[in-house]
Length: 121
Image 1 (cartoon, rainbow, N blue to C red):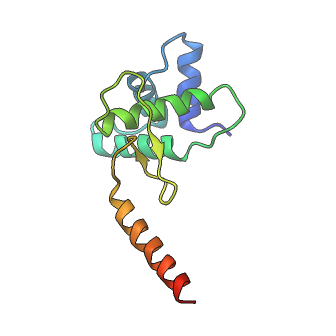
Image 2: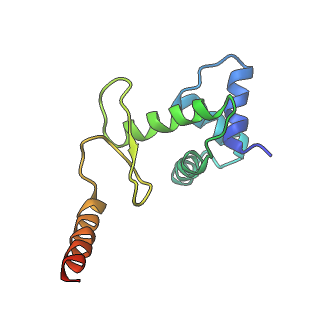
């Protein structure tokens, strides 16, 4: 069964409209029946839909992956045209390249503890 995000992108393709963050967001809100007046809830639902969308071997996944990247790149403060985000391998958060992540300190501490524990063995 297709998700509301799948249905939104398919509607844009069928309508020969561009599949950009604003067009996908607007169509997603309409299809999902979210209250346009509740902006916070709508944005959170869209973010969650982008993040949980599975990568599949179909024509929609590359489009949704691009929209997801464009959305998070812009939201995180990226300013290059066509910039790329990456996913933290530890927590799954979208990150800008070469930016420290609040999670990095904890991971560094944990790996230092693990190394210290191994050297004592």
